[in-house]
Figure 1 (tube, rainbow, N blue to C red):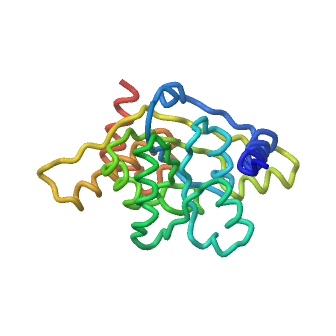
Figure 2 (cartoon, helix red, strand yellow):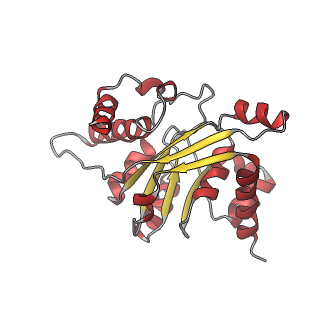
Length: 226
């Protein structure tokens, strides 16, 4: 029995029938061939289901926090879906190597650079994992902005038997380029900012959090308006 298809179908059904989801701007992303990295803000538990619902790729690389491996069902389901368990708080070289190999083999990584859900709905500071992988693999990065999937928003609508409105907005693919005049650490930090500001440019102002007034985000917003 293909449990992966059943699990993915169940998650997609929850999103399809339990929310009013609008997908915007995925045309360019659909044209990508080979490995790529999709980076999105992280608002709630439903984000993982949304990922599987909107994804069209066959080799979808999804990371799951190591703590979920302790749960028997999550461990089993993760194995069926070929997820990679990762230690979010330490350099998990084993997990990064698995991701890198699958990216080079044409896989598509779905990752939340913040590393955890934002309880306020506003963006948190990005962590280095996504930037490191994008620089190392040299593959295109696709920013994704999600709105409306905050846990409290979902719960309050479902309690009233209503479907919450959500949106997944895809941005234009881009590539991170290292500056040879900078150190490795400086290049990673610069790349983190680029990743997070690219996501922020797809979100309403109230969602932009710590990057709301960042000069790079302002540049991207001006480019969009031009």
